[in-house]
Length: 245
Image 1 (tube, rainbow, N blue to C red):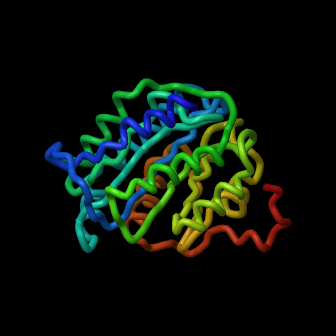
Image 2 (cartoon, helix red, strand yellow; image 1 turned 45 degrees about the vertical axis):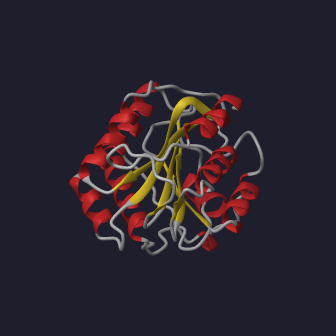
């Protein structure tokens, strides 16, 4: 974990589309993509999940959604996590304002080795994403952590504590519980993400239930986050027993 935090300090390099370093850049949204790579998924499933993100970044519809914003650009960062943030699993802030810059981010992610880690610490992932969002060389009216996973928090700080700390800083946390992989997902994971993980202004949870729907779900979720539009709640947790976070 220490090396991952050091990587943030060393690698919070703001890359503009032409490769120029910028002191301060204003964007429509800063979005952290926090992707679960714990051992509840095998390497093939982790690869399928990653391919979903790559497909979205390379899809022309994503660039169109970005260009529709007031400034026509967003900042995206990507990291993979398990019980800790994965060493070598971070791509820091990249300014995305065109199909080419989105594809370049996809290429960076694709070049990282596929790894798994022990444990599932959603709380550490949220705190790591919060540190990334506190980089004041990029300003945005919307700060988002987009966190995907197939399990509940089982190590590290309490997930609700990390969530509430982030929300107090103006961050929205949206959840993507993955139910698509056989035998991997925790029971009622969708409700867990709704009650224990998601939080902040306009927060929502979008569930990936089938492998074939994973890329489409990621696409729809990211487009909504870029546009700042939250869908109607698909999960009404008040209808069920309270979730034990």
